[in-house]
Length: 120
Image (tube, rainbow, N blue to C red; front, side):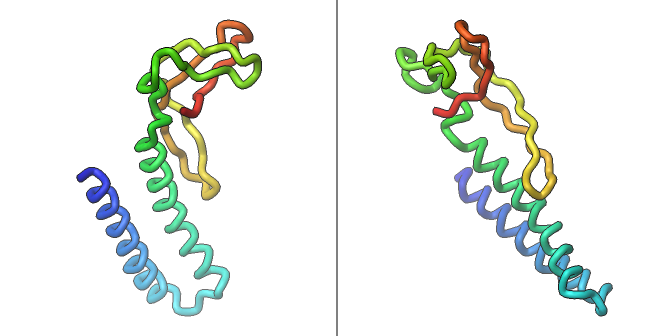
């Protein structure tokens, strides 16, 4: 059910882009190809960022505590099992310049003290 709601939201975003671009084009009848492309990219980047964030948060990698307790993620620097430090927020920026806030499991290596959001 959650996946259907997500896909419905993406369809709605796409429809808004199409209608918004039609309206924008009416307001900018002399826009150059580059201006049209820039405006369309600006709108798609916003939807793209939302899709990336939603897909990332649906991933099993958001919580490595859900994996087998005997197999915690391993530090990529020294191969020591990481210590769980709970869920932390990670702020990143997409290629289109939109901010994402991802809540993911965070671990710290007790040996080399590297902290990371390990994939699972």
